[in-house]
Length: 347
Figure 1 (tube, rainbow, N blue to C red):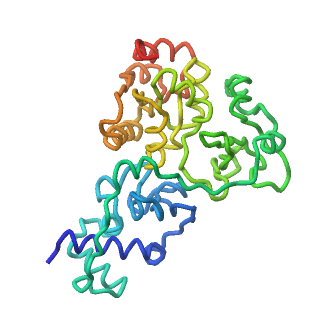
Figure 2: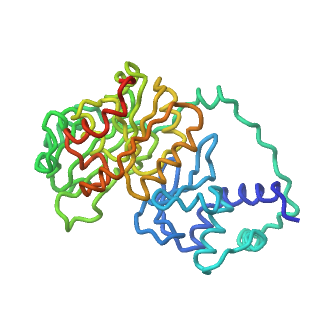
Figure 3: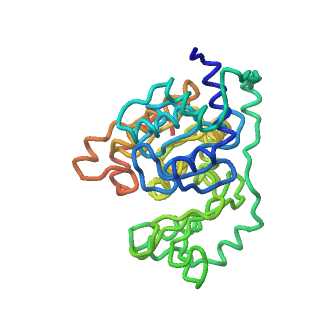
């Protein structure tokens, strides 16, 4: 008999054997402190961090997310849904829940009829709110970072960004030989207290692959720019949410320093916790205005629930008319003309 208790037992067993599952499906993955990441095997993605299974956390261990196509929404974001989604994709048909149970029993050598599910104690809202985000401490100071790269980045100056903005965010070029970020623009990532937790490197030359590279062990358990935005968030009770670092810089230049980035098109539990603790009452969602960005906005609405007052500027048609899809490609004048009207009365 197929019961929720049985499915939960399967999820627990799969979560304890993530490496076995991925090896079976011949999925090459990279391990991070709180997750494993890999190209999404369901829609056939090619981004090495396009899909993640979380291996740690009070509320999301064993959950998975496809950051680009949101495949987890179709197949459910637990390990049972992941296995079912991969097999369904490869067979070209819906793999039934019963078939998935039988597959997992064979893969793990377990008869789940005989497994007794251990009850989980639910976490109170206070416990979740007060939990600490786990981060690996890096013995690197901001002064160390500034001394190692050429700030401001000439690459991004040529792309139209202001020197003072790049200096504020410590964005510089790395030309040192035999360094992990050689030939790339280095975008340092600081936590909300200005502690260095990693960096992102953008290739300067098109032949240098991949285009974007994260420093070893970097995890999406931060909001980009929160170290600069947090005082402005408290002052205005408002936070603006965007996808990428360039979006943060462009809004900063336009006079909206309460902007933070989520490193892509999906928000996770740690980032949600940081938003809750930021003091914001109003959440302005400025993810991209393409299909992935619209889905990202829907996911943020759903995940954040009733925590905030939401504003999603209705500017898709205007952006389409000028043939751009995200705020990072807008000019300061366009931001003031199209976005500022939606912010009247709150900032």
